[in-house]
Image (tube, rainbow, N blue to C red):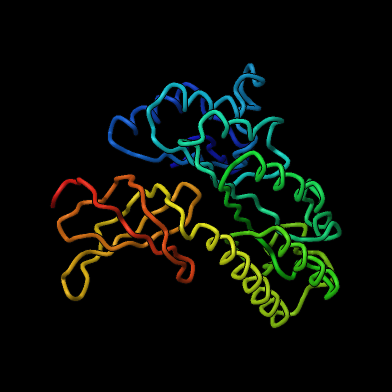
Length: 294
């Protein structure tokens, strides 16, 4: 749900009033919603266009929601790394059980030369430092990102350097896109466009690296017990012995677990023991629970 910005076709983003967002989350919690997601255009810049901006930035909004509502989980969507206020990660120390330990921070490219060409306001060093700071401050943090392969002028050396950098950051997941020229954008007029077949190969190689680091990140939770918010209806097993449920941990990991057919898990947060990793999912084992029957 877009709680923060409304993007106008011919203008800048506009922040909703802090009190209005808090009221909406209060209503969601009262209706039984367990998790709210703050999202919008340039989420990290929330509040900069409001009167008294120093007291209405994203950090203040998150604190207000967690202080003034009973929402069990609050998740943040995509955050540009240069938009985060100092001390932003301190929020997780105050609300470790409710503020989801997941950050999606778009990197886009893994070399300073490509970041400058993309007009990104960060360097590989500043991005790495931010991720390291977040991991120190937020236990069990999972970091995901966006990556672009084959931006105009990206040489093979650029790509190899960026690929190595991406691997060091241990992303659990990444949206990887081949560069696509859009009419009217500055990049469409750049020289040095990368051939389509080369872009496809670079996408494949980036995806392979993130698959590897993602598996490593997921594997470190095997043997742990994590709270999972269960979604959907649950799928009946072929032998009718139970139902297969899917849900998300606070750090945005998909969990699959089998429960007796009479258990109703939808929209409940329960503890789940993680037994294995299967592809991009964790395989969970549910304890004996006293749950609503179907």
